[in-house]
Image (tube, rainbow, N blue to C red; front, side, top):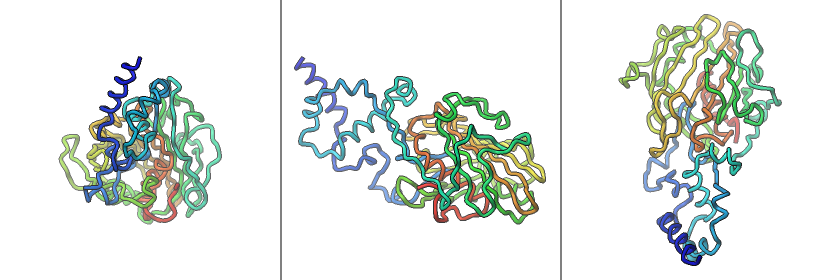
Length: 361
């Protein structure tokens, strides 16, 4: 028995060699490299990205209960670790898939509840389920009044169930989600519909979009770079023209963020008329973080419904979804997802993306 305990302690020492040091917990996970000046600057993504401290943390409780205290003490005694529990949780989050742990009941979900109010985003009452403005139905949540912050809601599996089925008008066939955020608002746009289509096609103008990072507690750049592509062959080109944004058209663009690097997105125009524009976006290739797949193709989706209310006023409704099989690192922080969704709304509506206050802190 004693030999087995010593063997476990030795294995634990080998597994954590180099971890216990003066580094921060974020550095231990490889999420920060303080030696690189680039990591000191603000960094990003389109409506489709995530930041490292937004990870859902899981721990294999069933396995950890077999670790003996004597093994733990032997391994870590006298060593300068940033946080023993934090290291164990961090390793567990990387080694154990979220879905399997959720099914076994050994899930520890660490996520802050966003406080939405009149300062950042209008509060939303509990609703049955999200509903885009399709087929004459009223949207859920309802549109915010003109000049008011958008109505934003992050939906949970407790509200919608694990196998929630998206509304048919989204065109999404997969059920369930890891994260789901809806945004409903009204905004002014002085140009005609061609001008609005031109704005949507101006992919290069996404570069520099900013959002409130709940990890760093400051405004940061969301999109590092973005440009239109001639197709999935990755050849860069000028922005799309409004004449290209016709119903049924599929276009591609590339977006760069500091975490998952380059990702290719498909932009599909569902409707494009004088009074209504509907388009959806999803990732075409696998998005990775340090070689670990985070989103497989089609697991990061968003759809936008723009309806003219009057000559210069438009209604806006969007839905952002991370597929239920997305890596657990990418989901779990509602505030972050809300702020990214609102950043895109602000960009489209011509509102400074870093205007105070953020939608959620």
